[in-house]
Amino acid sequence: MPDQMRFSAAISTRQAAGEAVKDLIRQIKAEGGDDSLDLALLFLSPHHRLAVADIVAELRTTLQPGLLLGCTGEGVIGRGHEIEHEPAISLIAAHLPQIELAPFTLRSMAWDSLLSDPAVFRHHLAVPKRPKLFIVLADPFTTPMEAVLGAFNQAFPGVPLSGGMASGSARAGGNALILNEQVINNGGVGVALAGPVDIDVVVSQGCRPIGRPHTVTQAEGNTVLSLDGTPPLLHLQNLLQELADEDRELLRSGLFVGRAINSVQHTLGRGDFLIRSVMGIDQENGALVIGDTISDGERIQFHVRDAGTAAEDLEMMLAPQLFFDPPSGGFLFTCNGRGTRLYERPNGDVTTIQNIIGNIDLAGFFCAGEIGPIGQQNFLHGHTASLVLFRPEISDN
Image 1 (cartoon, rainbow, N blue to C red):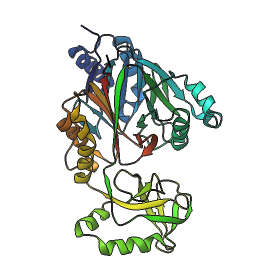
Image 2 (tube, rainbow, N blue to C red):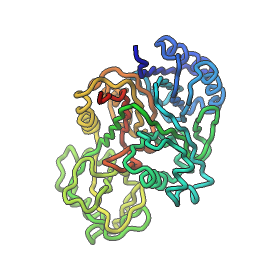
Image 3 (cartoon, rainbow, N blue to C red):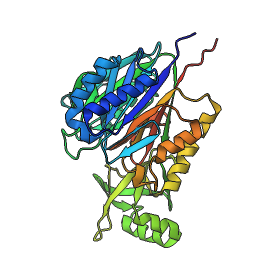
Image 4 (tube, helix red, strand yellow):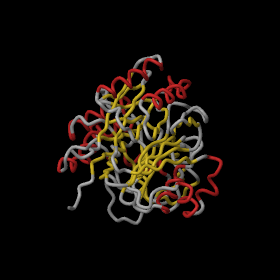
């Protein structure tokens, strides 16, 4: 019988860290998933931040994964559950026969030299010649993720990258990043995968555009001063007059803008934007403040989101998976603005995933920014779910 790819996921809501890690190990062993582990991903709620080193030591001693990667998250995901606002730890362990794993760190003191030259970046990562996927977990306070993704896109064109920004802390140094026995609080950690594996990265944004696209005619930093030559507030006021009552009500719960990925594209629709929050509106000059820097000449469009749109978009993105055998396992990196902040019920995203592709072993966390590809480029997203699915590579023979 050939050696097969397999995943085993576990989740524990025990309040004491020692009891939680024993619970995780028991679950993994019960599934027979403790034999020859090549990769394990660990996600912890901030309640366990001070015990991370002890948790890591126990897992590495008992389960002996070839590579352990992880971080803290505002909430964690595993085995069909999304756990928010309470102590929780999620673990997924994988046996990946013939898959090459190349771990790396991205430390914050070396950004200038690391990101300026693709050759330097490739040398630092020391990854296989033909990587099929990167997983990156990073600290949002110390990582210029847009620049980091630019370096990945330039050095490894067309290779998908997924992951997320650690969450659960409101200050620099408060998050934990894990790479084997190392526990660090800045920069990023990651792994490159290469070899006989088929990987799908599904990015579901969950927002829908309203109104029409506009061109940014004046911007400073993250402030849009003019759209199509007039203040953004005027466009928003006009849009409000045109909207149906349902969409007008959604705007009261939050306004978003989509930055067009390709501003010269003639027709823009769902999936053609990077979603960003509107942080505020200056009533005096009508300017719009968004959660990202923006430049003159870009095209943006106002967006709304709701649970129905998010679920519908995720279902649509997952529909092609029905043409293939069920995945062996997966990782889910979802926005901390989703979960019960978006859905009226718990387990919103994992329930949709299970309804489409079945009860696969899955783990992940709620991120302060999600990473995933659109087309051939990798981006930092907001209000998005980035799902990685693994299958054994189908031989041509």
